[in-house]
Length: 223
Image 1: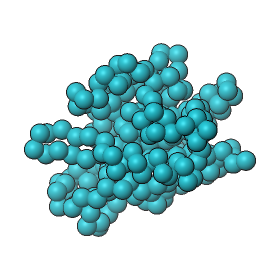
Image 2: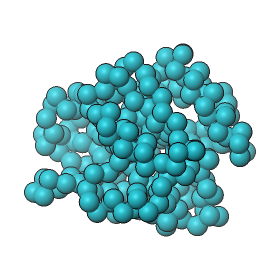
Image 3: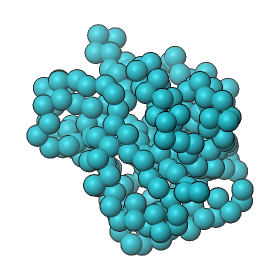
Image 4: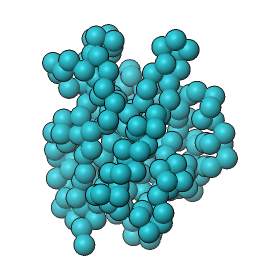
């Protein structure tokens, strides 16, 4: 039976666009017997609401009239949340396409991956038959949710799933302290931090992919 990985894209991307940006990374995992699934977030916002320089920096899909996102911004109160539209969508997507061995997220998708990993089945209303415990998660430029409403969830449910947190030395979108905050939300014996020399993207270099594959094989062999 094919092993499956759920891939959660970043702000202003789509599943197919994220798939195109991770070609070599995806090929390496397919060679290990994994099938990668790239859903597109259900929420849409006018592209005019987001400054063009931000869209450029997050690797947004070019020339799109709307923004695709997992997270919903509250501009009045200067905060954000993970709306029910996203959690219901992911629940249904996992029922239809899963179960999954692991989840890999990029930027906003990595932030969502981290939060959900505090209690993946509970937050997505999934039984263990529908989704057995995840074997691993990977966060590329991911972050811990900042709003006060989410802090108790992280504090009371440290992430125990084997996790890899990847930060780019030139990343100006997700600052190092944000990545480290999610990293520090994980159990010490289950977390790994990896650094690459680029910015806010999933590295496709042969050297990085080799390191990633070695990590993945190590944590999955422990099962």
